[in-house]
Amino acid sequence: EVQLVESGGGLVRAGGSLTLSCAASGFSFEDHVITWFRQVPRKEREGLSSISPRDGRIVSSDSVRGRFTISTDNAQKRVYLQMDSLKPEDTAVYYCAAAHLTITYVLLAVSYNHWGQGTQVTVSS
Image (cartoon, rainbow, N blue to C red; front, side):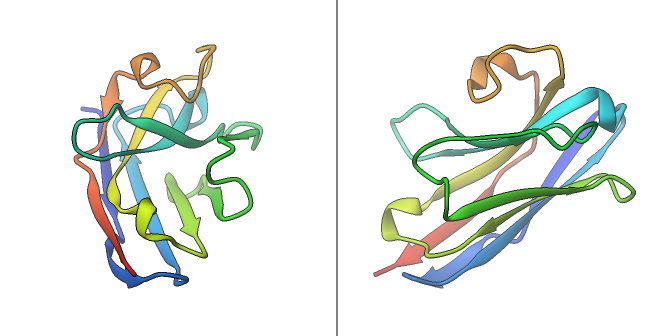
């Protein structure tokens, strides 16, 4: 059974940092891309940053490039999202998702069929 479990969310002040973790199981980790998304009410899920565990290739959106850093621990089958210089507008539910590495649009939610349950990140001003 494919499982993705996010952790590490919470409440942080603006300018602070958080590290999210996504634990993967039930599928071939290195045959997939793992991507972090976020969603606020009444908006579509926004793709933030994607990594291919096989070769380390990273794709990030302009909205978080330079502030958020994605990384992977292949031995532990975990993907991390280090979030620095957080802003109130970063408040959202953060999800990790997995799809086979042959997908084309790695930051589009419709490309993914495996999702975690999400973790809330709240940034206070």
